Image 1 (cartoon, one colour):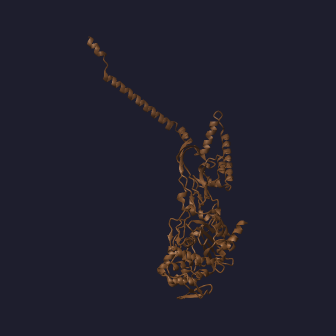
Image 2 (cartoon, one colour; image 1 turned 45 degrees about the vertical axis):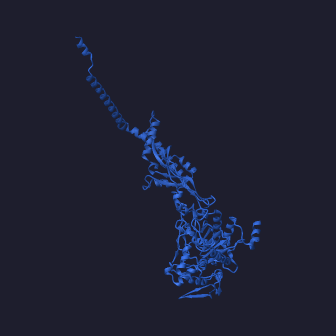
Image 3 (cartoon, rainbow, N blue to C red; image 1 turned 90 degrees about the horizontal axis):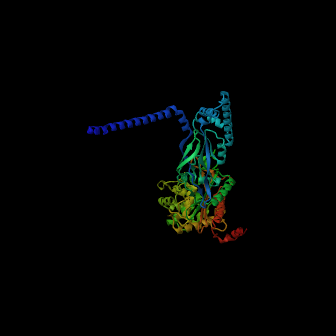
Length: 612
């Protein structure tokens, strides 16, 4: 009996496990039922409530604009800078007066505001009507603040082509933008952007260029260095309300990276000087247009490049291409007699002539069926006097002494017919006929600057080979200490000999006495070029007036090229139209750069002027 009771007191392990399993199953099923019930409650029974909560707050990513890099002159003076502004856009669906969602939201607010004493339908209608009137008034106030035509915004709201988005104003000053924000109009959005400002206006407009409304470079250095200047936009996470207004910045995702600044080789003082003198010359001579280029003779930097007519980069509503293109880089012309020093240098360098070689010009020279003429019968001329009198016959005789391939090769080495590779958008290459196609008369006309085309910057570059003792320099619009691509074209002796001869061009009986600069020796050459017409001939009354020169002639510091297109005030010779501009710009530029005078004969005059 005792043993039997002991066995009955022992628990059954199988029965115990089965009970626990039942409990777990019941518990899990209970949890599942609870979760399903909650899901049904949230997604079915209280769906409307959750949607309203979701409409109240929305996390979104917002782009952050980057500052565009600044463009400065060589001393850091700003030529193009960006200032923060805002653009204003509208969502017509949200801004329209009878937007159903907004009116429904307003009704809910009215009901929630007066839970104890509900408003009648007539009262609600009155409040809604007042709301519409207030909205119309605010829209009118916004148009007035932004100086928009009356009714402009309403027209957008009724235009089906603007369903979700339309800009109404760009580049609005932040203070004015805040006044518009204060109106608290639903459906009006504000985005930060940058406005490009050009402190020198038209003075450097052709060179610097401009950007469009999206702050993307369109012309000039703005376009050429777009990748350097533009920077990289960032992004941030923001909290928006149900009307998509930003109510809070949550976090920064990517910081914007500002564009890099570029420092031009331009000296703003010389740029302004050249601009002023060119403008005066174009007006005085009733010319079609004009260009001045100033180069550093030692390293090829562009210190100034100006054009007339010019434009205001801040006002571009009706701007045409002929106003904003940089003629110094993009326009080509036949250089005329300004090319003659290179013919003399080539003949001298190749041993085909000496400084004492005599040319019997006699007024005309027959080449096959063609005749080359001079303005006067100069008789017998040595090399220096051929340049001084600008004899077409003299340089023709020199050209015919040289083999075509050699003659062409010298021009080619000077960059004639090739781009100056400045990186400027739209830069011209120029044109020159291949020597294999040359006839004798082709050599003749090319010796006095016809049958080829150059830009003002290409012509100025060629003169570096004479100015820096035979070294041709590359051209740079970016500030640099020295040229990393110099190339010898002539021997130092040849370059110095030609420079010495060109000093005589500036004397009283030369062709460019008006190019003289008090206190400094000057070497240069005039060009009076008949313009080609549409029938591939040459007009009898339209000219390019050109002068190219350097100073001080004994050790040149600056090279200046002046080109005046179609002067029409009774004079057209390069020595009378372009040379005076050269003189004024060179005089001012040398003094700005503190270049010491080198001509004792005019030193007292110069010193007296400084004393005054």
